[in-house]
Amino acid sequence: MVGTLSGLAGAGAAVGLYATLVERQLFVLRRVEVPVLRPGSWPVRVLHLSDLHVTPDQQRKVAWVRALSDLRPDLVIDTGDTLSHQRSVPVAVHAFGGLLDVPGAFVFGNNDYFAPRPKSPHRYFVRAPRLPTSPPLPWRDLRAALTERGWVDLSNRTQALEIRGQRIALAGVDDPHLHRDRYADIAGPADPDAVVRIGVAHSPEPRVLDAFAGDGYDLVLAGHTHGGQVRLPGIGALVTNCGIDRSRARGLSRWGETTWLNVSAGLGSSPYMPVRFCCRPEATLLTLTPRG
Image (cartoon, rainbow, N blue to C red; front, side, top):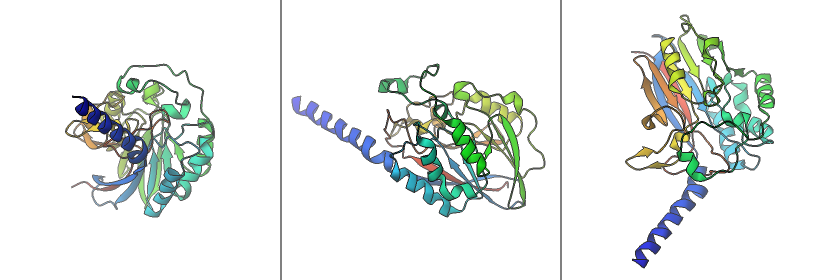
């Protein structure tokens, strides 16, 4: 019995070391095709970034994100939680690098507004509404840096962009996790003249997804879940930390009859919960193709 317990303890320690020291640094690019464009349109390549949770000492992550500019996407969408430290803004801008020369848009997440704080790890697995009590982060500085380079702040607003000579309609909401979303500000039928209509949010709360789908958006991009962050073989994500079901914690799925949803597992985690297991940090390159 003692030997068995000792072996289990050793295995648990090995898994813990792998999850904290190895997998959370194994960044991966996920590639998917989504048939959402108007028939006859040119394909559009969208790089979906989320949940970088940048801190000043993350040179490996910064270098990996900078290299994504080699993909030459047509559009970059960042679904929030870029920051995790008071000094994160210059690091985040450096990480985006050449991607800032590409048309882009973004929304903010809860950890852009408020710094993460130490808490018991078990609270990650308990979904309960909490009012922010942490110090604010310099999200306004991040917004200024990104908009200065031409990226669009989609917090409770709409914007049309021309990509490859085609009209793309974007609409976004501020962070639903903090109840900052004001969908009424953007409500109404999605742009009928666009080859694709894309909704953007940080947390994929069903009330927001239903609203986008009801207004005719073809694709919604979101993050926040970290893909569950800890996943078990045969079970998947243990939590989503939002209202969607665990099967949608990461990846592409359908939301209703006509809307696609892509939830990014993100590239980071809270500095106080630096764990990934069976859930590598990711960015997603979505190739939007014409509907059949």
